[in-house]
Length: 75
Image (cartoon, rainbow, N blue to C red; front, side, top):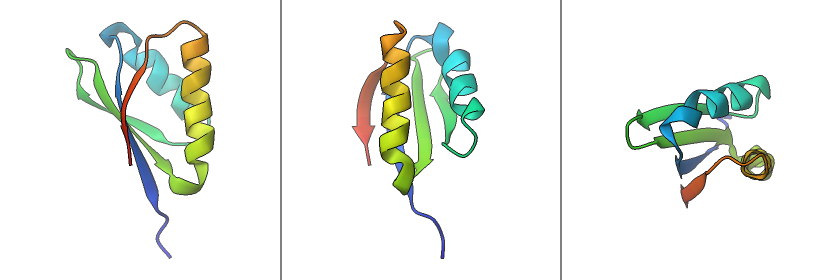
């Protein structure tokens, strides 16, 4: 059975894209980040649907660190 993926579209400062990606990658199996438009700070995060709550918690933790992260869409 193929796992279902959830997709989270984010808008972030360009300078923080690498840090956010690195943090998500460090949480092995949580998901991955794709940079869509680095100049505009548009990125997409893919995560297994069963881990969506954990990924949103990770994003919230990054926001609590002071990163400006805007969730544009969750699907």
